[in-house]
Image: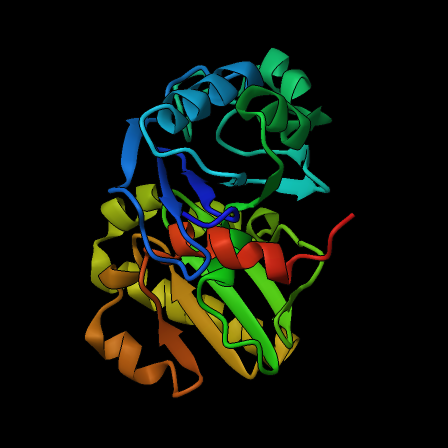
Length: 253
């Protein structure tokens, strides 16, 4: 295996997946998975990542995608991991404090003994999708809403669009999240997706929008047909595959 084999870890609200890929993005092992444990202080997430890494071939670098605002590998805020029992459960102040300002990159590098990138999970997902031409936006639909922007293949500074308010006091995260999809059904929820896409379009004027994440496949065919030819439904595997490309697309400190 070449010296730039990458351990890619995709940390979600419900599960954490990992695999090892070579420089071309070819998997060198089947992905391994763990259920996201709660409550989840930073050290526990690092321990889960280490446990998954121990089940895979040795790599020379790691890419971690996780929900929330991450700047230079440091967690500014994260939405799900501060809750007692997972998304939409009670927020624990001690977890908010533990995560705020936590240097996740340093912790991962120390635990795994290799250089690491730690990014928002939608950013890693986007690295596996974009062509590198023009203004490309990525939104991911899963436990909540994720987003990323790329300008000619370079990742732009992150904005947590999920924390904006839509209506009825709901954030975008809640409005399009898994809980609402289950409550409303795919048809009604898909119309919400279209409403959000149409509200973002005049703000970003993208050349192409990718919709990824596990729930992208839940969007009904009727809504997909109305999204336009600049909107592409993406493969959820990009959350792992983007772990390799991220090293060439993220400005290094």
